[in-house]
Length: 249
Image (cartoon, rainbow, N blue to C red):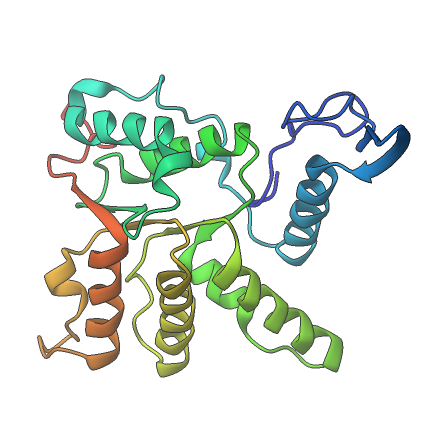
């Protein structure tokens, strides 16, 4: 299953996720005594998702997170973050039109950030939200220009989709801070989504005040700009605690 769609996505021939047509993808209306036919929104949504799927074939929801839901998360480990995630899903339709409409989950390894992030994504995919998701280094790799004009064009199309998709999940932000090219691409994506007020879900192991620093502890202007926008566009959820992937024996 790709990072951009679920195998259980609605079929256009059997149902309409918007409950507007009979599943055929067409709506018949009688206007002034004349029957007219127009394309349903479900067809447009499917076409948009298919384009995303095609361009991001190499970016996949990790097998570990495909079945993650907010129901199978152990709430006692992160009750506040879980409660906020549930509210986010419930209020997504309303929130997506607000200035602050994303989530940024911050905390050390093994505290459940990716579980909650992908659980939110899975819940919103069930609501027919078009989305792109992946681990940041993998997504950046898919944007690197390859030899051949067609491949370069596809890389640019991927970048445009990351900038404009209805929802984007960037898992493990900050794990690739080295090259200027990577930081530039991240800034282009986040800044575009900030300007257009598009929902973005982010996870990072680094506190935001450390995300802006280089290895020597000096602030990096590009990362300061990225983090500034994240603070404005996302609700920041701090997920502290022990690594529950490695329980004590």
